Length: 442
Image (cartoon, rainbow, N blue to C red):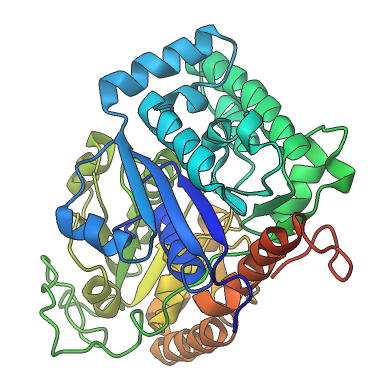
């Protein structure tokens, strides 16, 4: 019997973890699902969206107790500004909820937790207080957020440049405080774990275990074969089957798909760059079409529908038909932290993928075998022209990607270390470091 089965775990997430329709929710939902098999989980979460009763009931089925508090847009902005005026990060204020803070304290006072899992740095203040001093804390930072803000500052103009630079400094202070006061830290890849050690200064960091535990993918849900017994929504533009040409022409044809949250800056800037810098120059050699699929398309993304061959599909209930209907998935992100779920999902359905070096981070694949890495305009054009002219190679690469994901990136395989790490904390009060390196990839 699992000795941790009856141990009580508090899990804090900055967004309600269901439905798993964006990168952070995909990771937090699967963490919740896997950890609930081993611990009695209590979930505390903030949300800026209405939660469907069925979604709440689904999450409650994994938990001993659940508290979700709204941090609506106006309250979130107000609290972010208040946090900024107090020389703390905007991020801490955005996900601050006095109601959730009171509930977390009541839970701890009446039932005391054996361990805490904090998902993302913005939720750490909820347990950075005296009642939790002796409770083991594992923090899943996911990414080195201070580096993300720093890079955004370098890529922006005033006044955003100054705002992002200030946020980078303040988030780094928060990350350093977390390193001082936590029992173990987790990031989404070995690269991020190493980056954290190199960039975040902390007196006790040398003694704090830091692990790289990457994301996984549901290899049954994302499969090369659609279960046609399920009510799939047909793609809303004529992608057609992979082997059918999209345009009557002597030129080779290629149908592309990009998936992701479409108001998230790295996604917006990446797909905007692709549509304006890559597609136009390919018109003379390839009949190329692109479907942009995802939630909350902003105006900048919606405007891309005016580019020849581009269809902005927006939000769909199921992304799999769009992956199945395309020839190639793309991830042209220039600003990316950690492993990209969109890349793993495309590989899981045996769809060949062209990615930037940033989008390839954390995926142990070989360019030209399981996917293709392209960074410059010329590299992207060459990769896609090759894909268009070599359908057999697309099939080969798709199959190789699927085999890699099945072997190395299932959620159960990826998150086994989380179960071990939190179980060690819950049973002994500190993570077992006897056989584990301070930095390691799982």
